[in-house]
Image 1 (tube, rainbow, N blue to C red):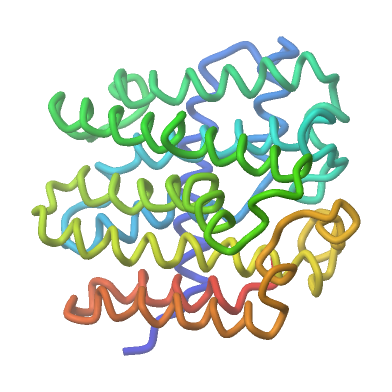
Image 2: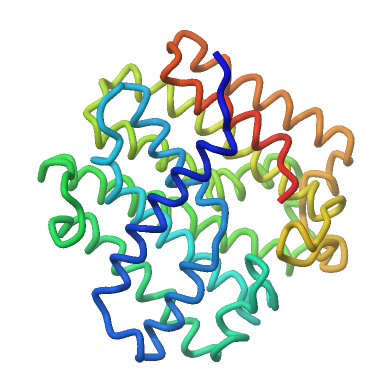
Length: 301
């Protein structure tokens, strides 16, 4: 079966963007806070996490539109994390998705508050979906989604990973592969894993299916970060929409820095192979997930 991944990604990005716009259009865009949220949320981007939610929902063959509240919430949380990551106190970046970072376009205080607003509003989207969405999970499932997503984004997930990553700048200790795994399992991996899990939960997947999808997601989540580290060395800034070479300049702990560039490429390939193995028994409905896994290892941005 021929599968056109670029077309699939484009179609799903358009759907996600449509609903993200509807969410923002509830508010007065003449306010600086809303303008800053809009600047970062609608700046483009791969929309990989919500698309993974959609692809996961499709494995069961049900209407993936029921997963859209979780999809939008996850993308809002992801964008908040990027706004805060880019701040001078964190990574101090000037560009994001080919545009000025939020604090460069506005100011640091506005960027901080825009990130805060996206994070908190994300959970409003899940808990109060009838304002925007035609179909959505039942109350019990939405509570599970809030629990899972908040856990992945918080002190047992992304935020703790960001803290460990930040501390790695200031310390020569723990610069080993095990510690790097821990950072990226939390910082990047948890939100990718919960994206896949949220899609499956939204459509009522059984626990065995979800377990296999989680293994898949764990592997591609780590592979995604390994490729990010490689692109920071070899990537084209014009294609990526952000600067390259910053990891070396900042003496940042990365996979190439610890195990070397070629070994990092082989490791990413091994992770993707393991991800594909986890979902090998799924039928053609899992083709998008398989294609996304291969996309991750071959991407240039």
